[in-house]
Image 1 (cartoon, rainbow, N blue to C red):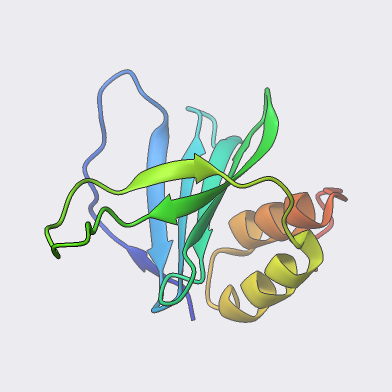
Image 2 (tube, one colour):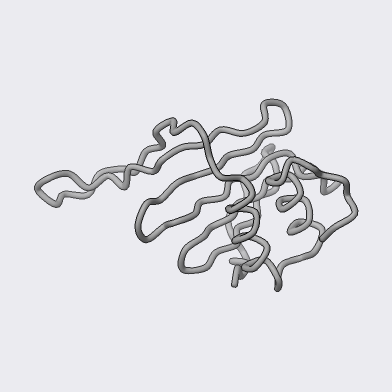
Amino acid sequence: MLYEIKGIKQHKDELKRRWFFDQDMDLTVWSDQIGDIRSFQLCYNKKCAPHALTWKREHGFLHSAIDDGDDVLGRKKIPILIKDGHFDNIGIASEFKQKARSMERRIADFVYETLCGCYTGRGF
C-alpha cells in the first residue's frame, strides 16, 4: 500500500512535490500552484529490477532502468537512470491501482489513467 511521506522539503519557485512509497514502489508527484499535476515519477520493482517511469505533461513518458550505484567492490555510488525503452504500462498500472487504494483519489486516478493512456478525469 502506498503511503504519503508528510513534510518533505519544498523548494521555493519550484512545483509542489509529494512523495508516496511502499516496499516495492515509490511515486513522486509535482503539481503547480492550483494543484494540477505537471509530472510524476513512478519507481517500481525496487527490490529486484528497479525501474523509473517518468511522465511530464510537455513530453510524455520516459522509461529508465535504475543503476543503484553499487560497483564490483561493493562501494556505493550515486544511483543513475539509464534509458530502457518499452514498458508494460497495463501491468504497471494494475500493480499501481492495487497499491494506491489509500491515496488521495484525484492523484491515484490521474496516475492510473495516464499509465493506461486514457486519462479522462473520471477515476477508476
